Length: 367
Ligand SMILES: Cc1cc2nc3c(=O)[nH]c(=O)nc-3n(C[C@H](O)[C@H](O)[C@H](O)COP(=O)(O)OP(=O)(O)OC[C@H]3O[C@@H](n4cnc5c(N)ncnc54)[C@H](O)[C@@H]3O)c2cc1C
Image (cartoon, rainbow, N blue to C red; front, side):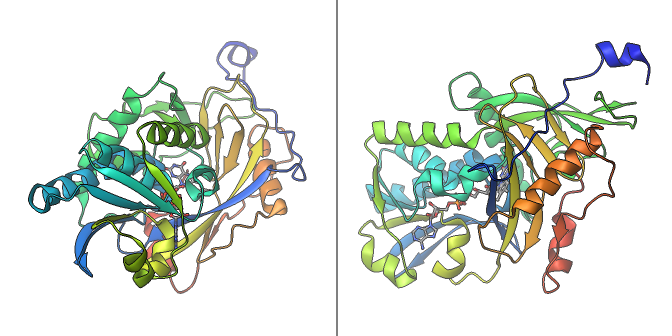
């Protein structure tokens, strides 16, 4: 590497100092992956109109506004006939909060029921890249196109308006399946990838790609949605539903929007839902890092933390962080920048034998 390239072409190197014992430094979340595909449909049950909106795997933040728009359309068509004026949204994660926001536009009185506050949900833990990661959509390509268009456009329009959304380049060592999918389904929605003869980082000599995408910071985004909903008189009820009949007896509204994520596995007896656990190392923020990075694991520098993640443990649904695994993520990432000894590429994908054949094709190559 020439000193010329080092001085003017390289982007800032992260500081990989990490103490896994610091509270909040290691976290784990569970992606609500659905084996067939995400669920976005409606049914009549026990005299209620139920719209399901769950199972978005590792792409719930990404797809949220687009799915919420579909929910609004479904409910709009229904109330045109039923004349109902109230709706219950189950779940206060990103799917519940975005759906509630758009349902208000129909003039409905919205009540959110949830056993967790937004800051306790899986959504709050998400890394935040706008990318179609670990979600199935076979047979729903047309629907997904619309969802992607609405979601991307809505997020993009919210940049600079205190929603925690930023445009960022993502540098990857190999093609990013999660963004290639977007370019294939909706050409022109996001900028074309730029091939690079050499990734612009210290310690890197290999070629790669630059994708221009969005970074959505979940803590800021969810807090903003929650604040706006409260200002618009949405009521939030703390409630844990034990099963489906508990929902039907407890909820008075005739329209129910089910955004319970992985909770739908038990609540709606949905055996298609498969938890996929992910560990995240949360380093202190480093504002000089204005890029995302992916190479068998990812690094998303945000304003609250530099988030390093990319583990996938299928059929594991506990939210207990593994400090050793988080340290391994950081050490591996540091090694790519020449800041830790070179190491063999760790296998961060732990397949469950029962499901591996079904899940493998959607697991990302990069991020
Ligand atoms: C490590 C990790 C990294 C991720 N990174 C990204 C990323 O970079 N980009 C991206 O787009 N996505 C990412 N995701 C995926 C994203 O977090 C999920 O797809 C998304 O959070 C799903 O949102 P949700 O609202 O459906 O579920 P949740 O956020 O889990 O919300 C479900 C809600 O339902 C409620 N609920 C459930 N069961 C019950 C019950 N029985 N009674 C009452 N309430 C109930 C819960 O309390 C909660 O409020 C990541 C996920 C993980 C784990």
